[in-house]
Every structure is written in C-alpha cells, then in structure tokens.
Image 1 (cartoon, helix red, strand yellow):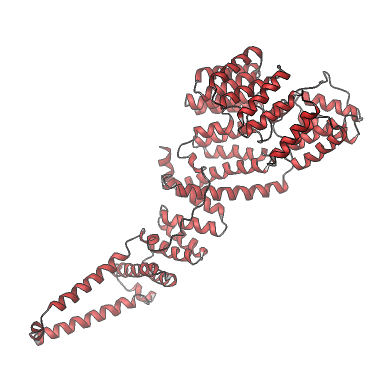
Image 2: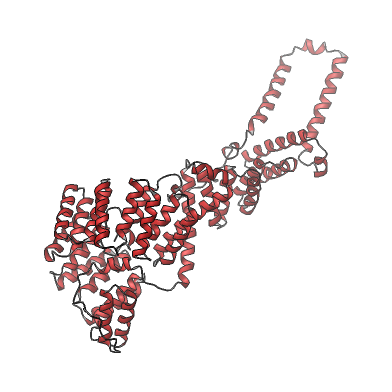
Length: 597
C-alpha cells in the first residue's frame, strides 16, 4: 500500500511512485495545469495609467491636441508686427468667423458630457462613435489623475453613446478601486456578454467575485483565464488554486457536519493491520456467544478473515461485555476509530488500554501514530522510547519508528530501524521491502536492487515484493521488467488491487494506452470495490482523456469514501477543478475544441 494512499502517520509500506503522485507526474499537459499552485496575487490592484491603457490608447489623442495648440501659438509668436498690421479687413473677418466656429465646437464638445439620451439618439452613428471615443479619452485622463468618480461619470456617458465592452471594463476598473465590487461584476458581465474572450474584463470580474466571497465563481473565471491565456500567466493559476482551496475547504467542513464515520477500504485496512506481526489466529470461527471473551475471539477471527466491519462490531461487544482481554479489545477499537479519522477519540481507548496493561507495546506505537498526525514529533518519539524501555527486542517498534523516519525524510535513520527489525524478525516481509525503498531514496540504487532481488528469493510467494520491486523498476523506466513484476504480483495475489493500478500507470506511460489503463483500474475495483487509490486514479485518467463527466463521477466516489478532512478536501479539489473545466467547455465551446486538437 502506498504512503500516498494512507494518512501520513499510518505506517504501511511506502512505495516509490504509486497512486496519485505517480499519475500526477504523467498529467503535466495543459489540461492538468489547472490544479497546480498556491500563492497570492492581486490582478487589479495596480493603480495609475497602466491599468487602463492596455485596453486602448487614451492619452495620445489629448497629447496631440495639446502639441498642435502649442505649435499654433509658436507660429503666431513668430509672425512680425508688420505682418499683423498688414492684415486686411477681409482677413480679420475670416479670423473672427473661425474663432466663433471654434467656440461653438468647444461648446458642442462640452455638451457631450451632459447630452440627453433623446439627443444622443438623434445623432448619426458616426457622430455617436466620435463622441463616445472623446468621452472615453476624457475618462482615461480622469483615471490617470485618480479622480475615480469623475472617470466613472465620463465612462457612463461614453456607454450612453456607444455601449462598448471596453467602456464597461474601464468603468469596472474604477468601481474596483473604490470597492464597489457588485458594480464591477455587473459591468464586466455586460462586457463579457459582448465579447466572452475579453481577458481583462474576465480578470476584473474574477477579482470582484473573490472580494465578495464568491469563491466558486472566481474559481471558474480564473480557470477560464488560465485556458484562454494558454497557461502563460502564473498568477492566474495561483489565483485559481487559491479560490479552489477555499471552495474545497468550505464544502469539506459542511459535509463533515453530517457525515457518519466509516471504515476505509479493505485494502487500506489490510495495509495498516498487516504492518504488525500477527499473534495467535483462531483457525475456525468461534461460537457467537454473548460473553466478552467469546466476542473477543470472534473479533480476532473476523480480523484474520479481513472482515473488518464485523470485527469492529465484535470488539465493541467484547468491551461492553467486559472481556478479560480488555486492553487488547480497547487497542483494536482505538485502531478502528483512528483509521476512521478520529484520532482524539482513539486516544481515549489507547489511554485506557495502557492503564489496564502498561506493557502492551502495540498501543504505544499506535498512540505515537496519532501524535505524529497531530504534528507533535516529541510526543511521537517519546512513545517509541517508552516502548523500547519495556521491550527492546520487539521488532514492531523499530519497523514503525522506521516508518516515521521515512515519512519525515530521514532515510538513513529509517534504514537503520528497518535493519534492526529484520534482525529481530527476518520473516517479516515488509521490513525487507521498506529497507529496499529506503536505500533507493538514499540514491543507493544498486543496493536497493540487491535488497529486492534477495527478497524475491527469500519470499518467492510474496505478491508484495513483486509489486513494490515493480514500482522501483517503473521509476527507473525499465518498463519490460516492471510489467513482468506487476503480472507476477497479480498472479500471486489476485485480490490485491495495487498491482493492477501500478500496471495501469505503466500501460498509460509506456504504451500510451489510456483504454488499457482504464481496464486495469476497473479490474482493481473488482478486487476491492472500495479501493480509494483505484477510484482516484480512474478519475485522473478520465480527466486526462478529456472525459470530464466520467472523471467527476469517480471524484464523487472519492468524496464519499474520504474519511478525514484532509482527504475530503483533496477529493473535493479534484472534483471542483474538473467541474470548472466542464463549465469552460460549456461557455467556450470553440476554445474547448481547440484544446482537444
């Protein structure tokens, strides 16, 4: 079982490249970049003329008029007094007429700012466009002067002459600066109705949505921006991810308010429980008697049969009926509670178990796992030290402490603990597997290969050795050999879904065969219908192929199966990202088709 498919504190075998992490390495094209980064950015916080002049040239027209006026004045200064005196009455009359005309034109220009709708309607189209452009230019000047309300007034009048998307977007920019985000949304939506690929308007609306707490709408707009911009602007991706996280976090909290606790998949449970050495296992099913000890024996039998729901119910009955194996029963009930995602509640059972039997090593190890999940490294390692002080020859201690070291990236310390575990119990296969993986992580490739080759000889019937060795080979892109190992793992243990998933990833990467990969993932679900890794992988495979509806269906299943808030948030994130792509395909059919070419 992959560490990527288990909580970070659940010590189970940690493969090289299994599960979601492996497929994410494969999904690095433009479709998958939608779910990609975390940072903060303000698209519209910039002030000054740059924010607006990207829409249109605003200043040059004003500057040209001014320069022309200056030139005329300079030319007049250059005229001699003799020339002035030589002006004829006719020339004076002409000059007077021109002056009057200029005054009339100026008055007419001033009137455009207050012209009524009726008067505007009576103008020719050409004149309306000219006046609209004049007003837009004045609005840009007011924007540059940071006179936002005046700019809004001028843009509004420009819109009255000609409802152009640029004018709406410019006015939205002013509304954004003065904090009127509802107006921003209204104006940019109108602009986008006229031109749905108007990136600046889309960015301003996304920013306004985010500032009004409409994170889902902001996420959809930022998703569209990422695609329309060809994923060139990293800030769009960061903003999309920021809003996606807020959406997923909020929805996860709502779901958890009413969600009933449930056990994870059989594969998940087995991966954790198999990481402890087994005690005496009942060979036949005990009688279902209403006594504490009978229920405890029945629970142990169900546990060995991987009938985990029935085992949990029997342990609960054993506790209620005061079994003489109370410490062990509390330990197992706490284990089930922990695996269902309630570490705090599990601690209560573990604490009681230790009060009853202070020498029961397993309970310290599991309590350490909860402290690790809570981020308390000191308490975590104190639990292991306490366990060692009780029995320094218990191999479980070193294996599980090795897992903690591995998860925290301390591979040398992990390798030492795996070796100690092997020395104390050479027949426990997972210590060998984890030691090989630790060597691989340390860059000791040859040593890692030798560890796995020896394990294949020592454990010839182990599907797990073949599966994890196959992962190592896949990571090295030794596809033929990896393929053989996954096949062997499936033959040795057809009920284990993980080799099917690994083989699916190999087929997808090596043979570029998404249909074959899909088939293998579906086979893994035949082995375990609730295998969370298989369901998540299928969702991502369908997303990669552009089958977004199917991808969402499997992400919905991942949401149903998630136990912890972190798992639920992750599953919701995938679904929401896929749903944003679906909305983009609906709103931008032409651009969506272009992406698939």
